Image 1 (tube, one colour):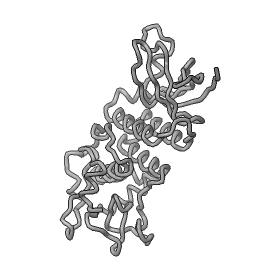
Image 2: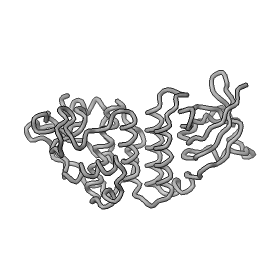
Image 3: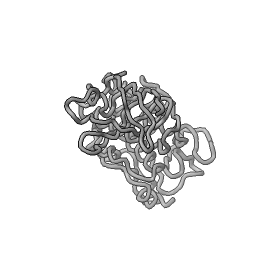
Image 4: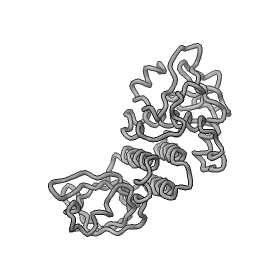
Length: 283
């Protein structure tokens, strides 16, 4: 039996048998770990309540044949308590956990930067000092940068010409100059590009001064860009509560008039999967 210890965030839990659970953790040194917590569904369990989604814990495990086994748990940060009591923060945290799970396909591979991003985002949601939608979009942008999918914002995605540029195309990689623009590109407001840059680089003064309609439009772009690269839709994103979400994104993101194509859908209404985005852009 090989024992090891690590700190991690609980991303999700699954029932196993009558009293056990499979816990998916994103850990500091071992990356994503799936482990069995025996007996945690019993009322007499010593640490069942500590192994709930969004919990930041210190765990001791021993290596099993197929799944590791959790033997000890101590709470590091009780992020779950303030998050689960607020719908907007809960849905944003669910999207953060699902994104982290999708971006770590290989178990046991260290992903320290992503781990720190998840802990920082959950801490910001638990504190409640920042708008949950902004925290989620900042996390999604930075996690895409970690994965190598960061959208071009201040330069053309194709030729590298300095911007800002009026066109934005998800399959092409972000902003496009006039010469590189392709059919199906959308035209976000200049303030949307400013907000994208602020969220990516942690300029919270600029981000929090943005208008609610601009935040909504940016949320749609960020979610669509992420799901294009994941090649599947995140199940949690359609449930994320967005402010001023009743107005369609088309109000401020007009499509390319020469192409007659549709614009990017809002994340609050469920962004498209890769296949539907491919058909809309003609890429």
